[in-house]
Amino acid sequence: MTGDSVDHPSHYAEGRRYEPIEVIEAWGLGFNLGNALKYISRAGRKDPVKTEEDLRKAVWYIDRELSQSLFRRFLSR
Image 1 (tube, rainbow, N blue to C red):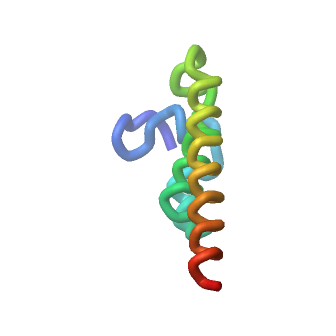
Image 2: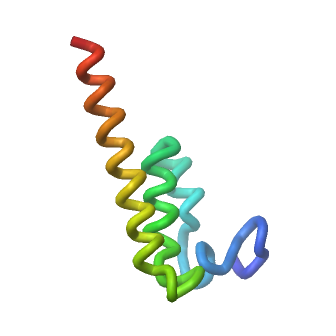
């Protein structure tokens, strides 16, 4: 896996055994958790200046997943 900017972007593929998309699909993570994994995996790799921003985005998606999960649980009572 090398740097094809569309199919295998280097910030996801280079030096890795699995790309995030493969893990997201294999684990059935869905939109929010999939995006969290994507941002965690690229933190410091796509743009090192934006490492903190990528991690904050991951946290945002995890928080959103937790909120939706709690809301679904509330509705199912």
